[in-house]
Length: 124
Image (tube, rainbow, N blue to C red; front, side):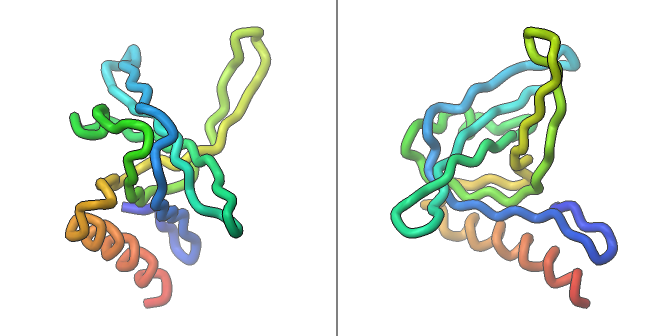
């Protein structure tokens, strides 16, 4: 569930459209990760691109295509890495803890309810 620690919370809820097919990689550890780019509505007619990582993605996540709409609940993470040129780089992304197709209303409602319960725990 979303990262909660005392009075602090790191919860992200996104509803957006895939910009392209996900890129799926298998790491040296054997873990699999899918990288998505979601177009999420912003101010007015604008949208913003949000990178999303999905660890051990289910098969349907790998089959997403450009234009597919999903709902993601997760947390924001800043990752540091070495570039090919040997320099340092960083990237801010959302790590999905739950991802569902937006057209599956029951799954969307359940996913949003999980996030709402996590946030309610902050004020309890």
